[in-house]
Length: 133
Image (cartoon, rainbow, N blue to C red; front, side):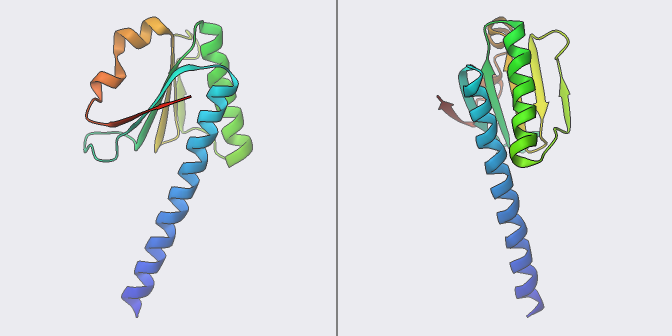
C-alpha cells in the first residue's frame, strides 16, 4: 500500500510539473509571437544527458531594441500568466543575445548575426527540433 501511495504521489508531482512547464512553454511562444519574433525553434533536450535544461526555445529579432523588448515581454507574460519569475537572465545590456532561464526551459532571443555565429541548433543537433509560427 505504501509503495502504491508513493508511486501515486510521484506521478502527481510529475503531472503537475509537466502541466506547469507546458503552460510556461506556451506562454513563452505566445509572447514571442506577440512581439514579432522570427525563426522560432524549440529544442527538446530531455534525452541528452549533458543538457542543462529540458527545452531551449530559440528565436531572433531584427534589432537590439526588439531583442530586449521580446525578453522583457516574455518575463512579464510568464509572471502574469504562470506566476513564475526567471531563475536568471542575461544579455539585456547589449541586446545581441538575451537568455532567460526558467530552469527547465531556457529562452534564447538572438540578433541574426549572433544566431548565425553561435548556431545553437547545430550545437544541440541531437535534440528533437520543432519550428513554431
